[in-house]
Length: 146
Image (cartoon, rainbow, N blue to C red; front, side, top):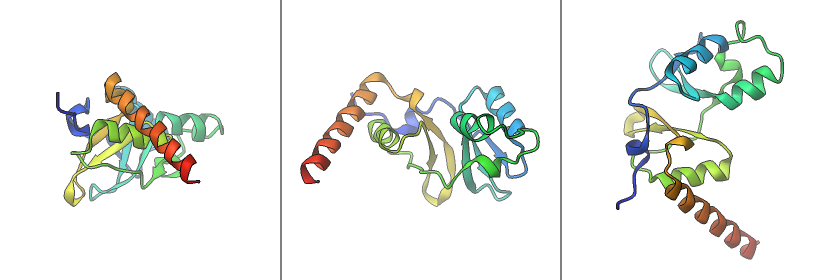
């Protein structure tokens, strides 16, 4: 069975996004309506400036008692997120997530067109297993070289 790409595995067929003038509350409502764990923050030209995730809401808003109705997403988003190309293998994307400590990767095509967001939930158990094996191998190599 050929390995899936992040674009093939992506559960959502459209981009969930908000503009730079959106509040954290509005972004959370968009995420809830779309039943997703992240929202991309885009400028008026449609260029991605950042991503706001469930973890951002927890650590940068709730834990710091920031008022979501008065705070713009640009103040708490993760700016310039790591992105992957649509042809990236799922196991490679999961490896990036394991090594960098996040669960969402925007998928961006040549020319900067945003195609969506790959979530760790989109990966199958065997793909996660492959990524974990690669992460363990990388750690062993780093230990041997370090």
